[in-house]
Image (cartoon, rainbow, N blue to C red; front, side, top):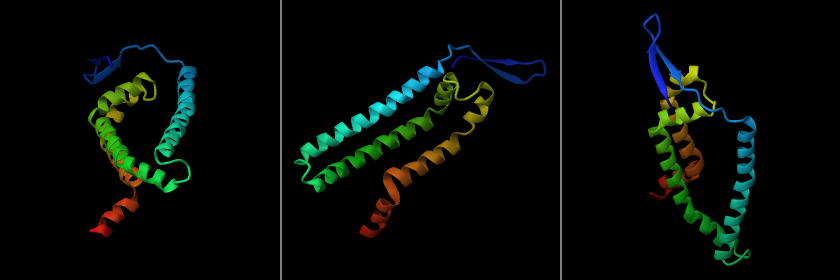
Length: 142
């Protein structure tokens, strides 16, 4: 994000954003529509591959065990992505400004939200991908 810091006539800092080419709302909507179509297709293809490796549709427990093995990898990838988002938060805010999701006058407030975003993402990681059942299992198995 190209920012020019200037002082106004009262001596306060003013952040000006360089003009960027605006993205069409239709292009953004089509992008998310394409994601909504492509992601389930990929999930179905992966499920079919796992079922084939597990010995066909008859042995559903083997399919669940295959997915269980991948759970650790999925949680690790999500944890790395969360760490990346938290570490690169100013770049994330710049990206959101370029997509016009954060208005230029909200820029400073969005930068200051890093601790709240970090807390929310960590709570998401603990409650959804890891889950209370797995956490409880750690205490029970000890």
